[in-house]
Length: 85
Image 1 (tube, rainbow, N blue to C red):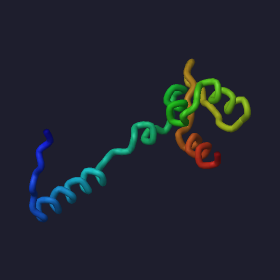
Image 2: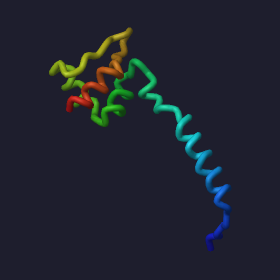
Image 3: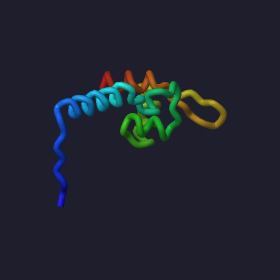
Image 4: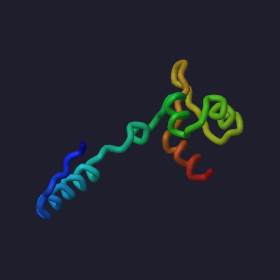
């Protein structure tokens, strides 16, 4: 059985203030902080599969940059793709 708690208005206000502070200080998701995303991160960010990502590259919708043997995508370019879709 669940318990009920009684709190005062000042306690509730204090709790709301703490929650607001936590939300204001909340860090943005890691994908949005990174400037360059690998293929897996890019597909997760866009919510698409690797084949679709490859198709977008071939169609020129996004550009990938090779560094060594890995392919990376600009997070700002991926954001533009999302906003223009």
